[in-house]
Image (cartoon, rainbow, N blue to C red; front, side):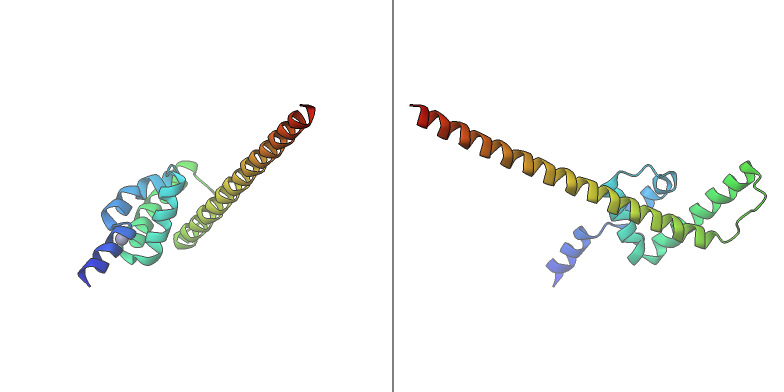
Length: 127
Ligand SMILES: [Zn+2]
């Protein structure tokens, strides 16, 4: 039992790491893999989500103060949810592009192999 608990601990990002990523998340400077882990963590961990919400609200409030926006948005919770949705879309888009790139590489390799087989067969027939 203790072993599986330890495994779970390793699988999930711990709160200390997640808290260290909050500022980077808000600045949108987290690398893709960290961003994915971070979003996964805050989905399950309400204390880290609250931590993020607090920083996010402060950040947005200061931004709105700087920009002196006429239509000041006060629903920060909704803003944060929107930001998280955008981040999820960004991850999906990036993953999709990576999958396309991987498929393209596979197709290229297969094409190269087929080409080489044809060349070899041609050479054999030539002899
Ligand atoms: Zn946490």
